[in-house]
Every structure is written in structure tokens, then in C-alpha cells.
Length: 420
Image (cartoon, rainbow, N blue to C red; front, top):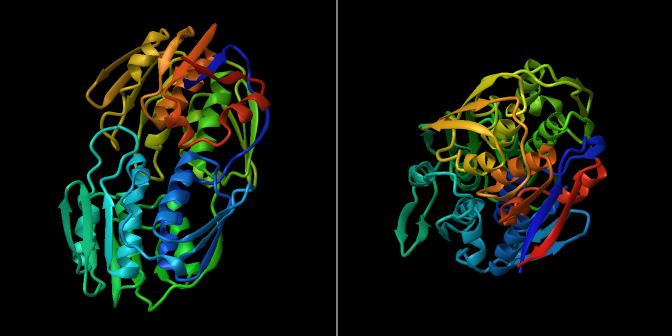
């Protein structure tokens, strides 16, 4: 038996919704806790599968882990007795590679399998390895395991060939307990990079410049326990903003940092959608057919690659033809064939999709090819005529907390079922 999501489309989303903790921040902060020899209390964690995969990994390393219903995890790093994160859980998600930076920083040894996660093209970890080696580690790959070891980690200048979020965070983790100062140039600027830096500093690290393209980490001797609250998830917020507009609804999203969604808000305003920004909330109102626009994904603060798929669904309902250019991730248009099954008119060539708007989608059985593609299928189902059945929803569960409950609270006809 497999779980699937069934959506009865054609209902406007209206109401108020609270946004969960940032998924991309959570999956980096949790592995970062291995750097501490004390207790770290991490609050506002989203209730998603990736968080529980990480909990499993921590426990297999010997850490004491307690998880409350309210999204708070307490990690006791004093009992960690292994530097190997080799387990099936690590192979389920890409963020497992953060254990390499954390364990290497604390124990000067680390092992982890090649990361899994969504199949959205080649996402090499060359920059991670380059950073570890610059700090003095020896990195080898044996039987699918990445192994890193150093007698001593020493701070060094590191230039990233591109602004990789994963490499930026992983190098920060490894450098916190190194001798001397590490400088990361062309660092990623995403909000979750800043959140991880704030967590490290709360443990006693000395990280400056997060949120800019130059981050400096002055090594310290040890890191202690701390309390930290995960920032709101701007990708989840953007997904619901797009869903509200696509259904011609009126939705207010609370627990949002408006500056984090500026790229989404600006593009939606360009489409003629009304966006109202408040101190910690955003309202989206769309009463008429939006205008076609061109979208180009870019590293933060540009338009997020993680919202490209849901945005294409919205553009399929717009007045005119839109061009979407994907510059961040390879193979991120695999979901387009599923949308075409629903009646979408999209042509893809290499990293460019031409989206013909004013299309009436029709419900059918579709497949979630990855996490954000799954979100796109949900948005498509919300606006399609008839019934949409979405399979392979394990990807959706990795990144969206209580998706069906949240959408039902806004008036959507959505449910989860077990089907042969």
C-alpha cells in the first residue's frame, strides 16, 4: 500500500496560515549540534521526515536526542561516540553531508555516504572537499563513503567557484574549531546560512559576515550548548503565496520575514497580484487573471530555484506566454511532463521553459519527481478541474509540514489516502 494525495480542484484558498520553521535551516542546524559537547535546544523545527532522519543519525552517533510535539529537539552531544554517519538514513537526504563538516570539526575525523535527496541533476560536493582540504584535511572516497581526516585543522582563505549554500555551511562547521581564521569568499547569502551562523555563534563560535559574500570564522577551542529558534521557511511561504494566487484566493501568511520573500513578492506584483507586507506577515490577494512574466532563477536574493516549479504552474494560468530560465539546478524541469498530462502547454529546451498561459488544467494521476515538483503538482491539483491524484509523495513529506491540514484550513479539497 502506498500513500497518495487526492485533490478536488477549483476551490479558492482563503484565510490565515502560520508558516513553519525553515527546512533548509533545520537540516543544517541539527548536524551542526555535533560540534557541541553540551546540550543544544533547537526550537521551531518543522515536522518533516528529514528532521526525523537526522534524529536517527544523531542517535546512531551516540548523541542523546529528545523531540517534543512542539517542534523542539534537545541534542546532548556529550555522549557522541562515533565519527561515522554511515546509515540508510544518511542516504535518504542531501543534508546528511553536513555531518562531515561537523564531525570533522569536532573529532578531526568524519565518514558519511554520498548524499541522497531529490533527483534534480548533478550537484557535486567538489567545493565541500576543496574547503576541507584547504583546512588541512585529507579526503578520500571509498566504497561510496566520503572519509575526511586531519591531525589539525588550520584556518585558510577559501574561494568558492560559485556561491554554494552547502559548501558555505559545511566549511563554516569544519572551521569553527580550527586554529586561526578561515575566510570564505563568494559565500552563499541565503537566510539559512545566516541562521546556521547565528546558531554557531550561540554555541560560542566566532563567525562574522554571514549574509554577505565574505564570511570570516575565527577558530575557538570549544563549543558549548545553547538555545536556538529556527527562522521561518520562506520557501514554504512562497509556495503558499503562489497557491493563493493560482486559486484566485486571499490568504494571509503569518510568521514570515517579508524581506526573505522579496523576490517572490516583486515578481507577483509584476504579474498584477496584490501583495500586502506587514511586520511579520504577508497577504496575497488575486481576483483576476495574472499577467505573463519572465522568470530567471538566481542565488539569493534572486528568485529561488526551489519555487521555480510552483511558479510555472501559476504562469500556466496567466494571460500570455512566459519564459522561465533555470540557472541554479540541472534537470529541474523533469516535472513538466506531469503538468502536460494535466493539459499544460510548456516547451522545454535545455534550461529554458516556454509557458503558454490561459490554460485550463484537468485533474489526472501524476507523479512527484522531487520535493518542489511535488509542491507544483499540489498547486496544479488545486486549480485543475476534477480530481488529481499525486503519487510518490514521500518527497513532499520531506519538506512540507502538515501540508493537507494547512491547505484544508484554507478551504482546499485535499486528503491523503492509501491505495494499491
